[in-house]
Image (cartoon, rainbow, N blue to C red; front, side):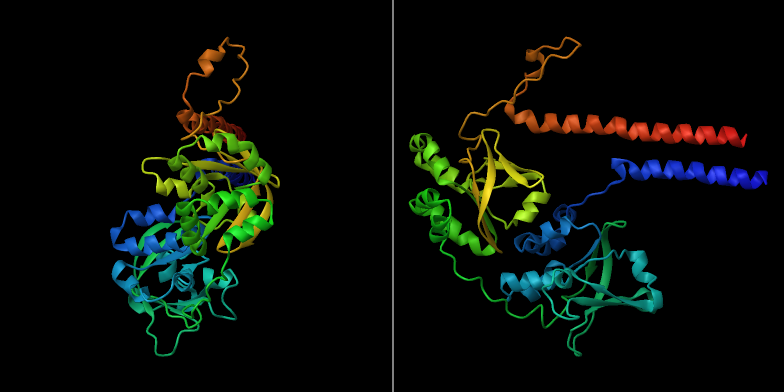
Length: 401
């Protein structure tokens, strides 16, 4: 009976330690498929196409995923497809389940079928978008799409590139997975007249500024079919900013208009559920210039923070992938052109720290200061959990004694 009691207490102690480990932020893993593949130049074309088709972003926000990577020679088979079709084909190579090297070699009954991102996003119909995985004797593993033609040879598993159990597994396969539905031509998006769209809702003045600048107008139109999000200031915001705008150089006017465009498609739901810095069309047009801003959300409100102004999304002007346009309350002003607005200094602490002591860093250091604060806040929480668990184990061991 005593032995049974001790076993129960020991199990409880171990459980407490495991719970502490799992609850700590250190246990929460994140990954970036672009960075993973960047360490392997033989996959540079595959990596570049994941970014160009915006699949990289979709992969990074998934929690359990397997990427079937193709080397540069295998990617040549996709050269004749349009970009939207390439996105469909490559989304077939992203399985929404985890398959590491060990799992592949120990499949139940030697075979399974996995849904791909092509299927899970609703793009594929019926069973299209599922991938059959078969493990043969001797460790040979093959992949083939469910709707592949009978004459198509399966793609052979080559090696594991990177595994973060059970978050992401990146595996190399020998050839492109063939699927008649994924390879079907994708109709081009309906033509969109940006000036007409902006003029109909809230942003007529901003539309006039864009159409009046040939470089900006061309850049927006060349980008819109491959993924573009525009944050257009409402007419009242443009009117309030015009005195400053008129004093800018021609180069600065081009930069600030491009600053309102992001070369990626972001739905409103995505903006409401993700925080972070975004690069803009001005970022790529200006060498050695940042021209980015921070997208923040709280409840249903989305704000854009430039360190000069904070602007809020007030309405959706248009949202149809690959183009999204949102009206914002203020004209976005980049720190590269305007003076940074310092945050209010905190009140002196009880330790006697003065305002001068707490406000001696430049605006360029704000991000690093925030990061330091976040780490400092997280550390006591981790140590606290371990301390609690350790105390629990100590008490249990004392009882066992």
